[in-house]
Amino acid sequence: MMTADNIAGIRELLAAAKRLAVLTGAGISAESGVPTFRGVDGLWRKFRAEDLATPGAFRENPTLVWEWYDWRRTLVAQKKPNPGHFSLARLERQIPEFTLITQNVDGLHDLAGSRRPLKLHGDIWSVRCTRCDYRGTMRQTPLAEIPPHCSCGSLLRPDIVWFGEMLPERIIEEAWQAAQTADIFMVVGTSALVQPAASLPMQAKQNGAVVIEVNLEETPLSPYADHVLLGPSGTLLPQMIP
Ligand code: BV8
Ligand code: ZN
Image (cartoon, rainbow, N blue to C red; front, side, top):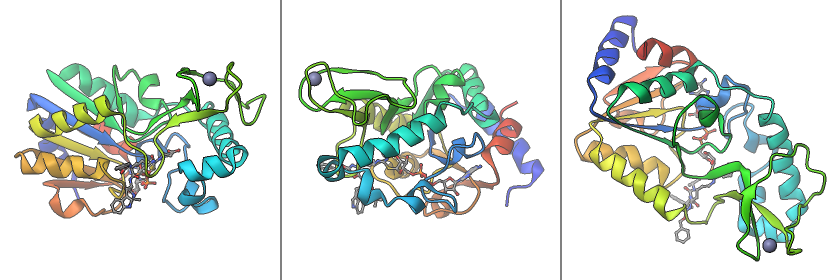
């Protein structure tokens, strides 16, 4: 458990960082009221990931998958960034080389002022056509038509990375690059179960980075982290980042 005086040590560590990378997961948005995936009130509890966040599920039942996303989009549209998101946006302006990598699709880092989050798993507001090369932003909540169609007549799909799908090449490349060059790699609010995101802090560690984890509880990453701060990120991050 990290005590207050250690927070002072972490504060100094962060302030002295030259190349800092941060990986966030659903936990950083929990205090904004966005349900996490695997927590007690997690999204997956009502729905099973393999039933919904896969290309097969979409092929089989696009209406069900779109109903799930419409429900999440309508919920996320009413949520605001919390002090944890704002602290990372503040940190970005203090550090010469800063990379924010997120597994979240809720767009709250953008709203908090983070300049260019690397969205490993896509964006809940972005859609793409299942046939032509149309890709765009669709902000309507709730959706007027489920499932929505492209002007070419084909189905639109969420522009989100589902299980078994490749992550966007440029984005994952940049994230590996940041993990390889970081002198500090901070991980906030992720269960560290989903690949390849969960391998990024391990890569950083192998390259000599100091790894800091912020989470409510220990995760499979904790034994490898140099510092584990247990508590809500909305409280801890503002203490670590004045
Ligand atoms: C790919 C999109 C390869 C949907 C998501 C077996 C072994 C290893 C890997 C695999 C395997 N079988 C399959 C795989 C690969 C698979 C994978 O990793 N599966 C896991 C589950 C075992 N990965 C993939 O399929 C990826 N693609 O590998 O392609 C490939 C190769 C060749 C050819 C083709 C393909 C794609 C992964 C992306 C999947 N998409 N989501 C959507 O979001 O709508 S994953 C889903 O989980 C979300 O995106 C989310 O971002 C992600 C991770 O979850 P977390 O963010 O960590 O959230 P979670 O709820 O789990 O945890 C919350 C944490 O916060 C907890 O620790 C909690 O304690 C903490 N917390 C809560 N409150 C707070 C807090 N912390 C601080 N403060 C608080 N207040
Ligand atoms: Zn189209």
